[in-house]
Image (cartoon, rainbow, N blue to C red; front, side, top):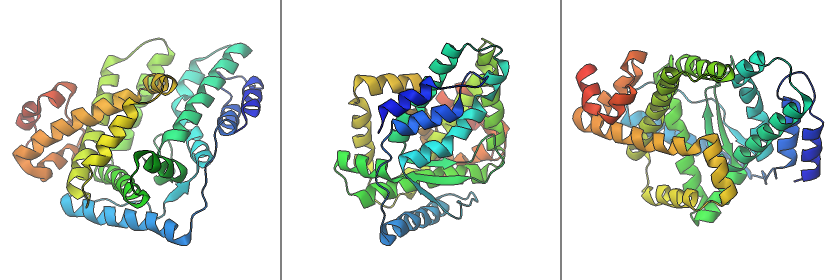
Length: 315
């Protein structure tokens, strides 16, 4: 890590937009230890083997048809930052388009904020299934190996078991997007609408509720599949991760709130409760009906009242 180089990159931010993305990426990587990515051939193959096992197991417990990326990306933290900065730039495009004259000090502050965000996420993301929203590229499956090794060590669990758990979780997301080809466009439109309104100083509450409800379904269905497909006991892993989140230091807790990561945990829990109720009534096949059409997504109210969704959506 080189904090002087990171600060220099932010201070040298230039251009006409509110964020100098090249400077933000340079500052984020300078402030972040890339981590060790020296894998043996056996370790590299273990990632691929876990993805294959997860694909087979998830396919066995649900009737949805899906494919995973033909190759996976095993990244260090710098690689993750570089892979995601363009996505952040695309998401923020409406804000940049709305901006007119940006004073240099504002550009510097914005660039610094984005660099801190990218650096924090780069140090904490474990795995990522990326359908590449707002882009034309194929989907990708990422594993940030140094973070997986570090967290497995902090939780005092075998790296092989923890890595397999992460692989299963990301494959469940691949299954969702494979079952619902319309989902990337649906999320993209709600995300763009929300960002555009925020850039104009407004909050489109309806678009935000629809985006939040859709992401709650994505996270909840993934949890349902994980509970059915993972081939080893894993309650201890989830509990250990929950304890780790709760015991973060004050700076990390502030970043979690700033980035809305606490909202993601709420989505996990709320979505899981919804799908457990639906599965108890109609089985996992009935739960999979959410992916048949955008109109089958539960509303914000139905997420807390699964019986209403069951009465509205027929198999």
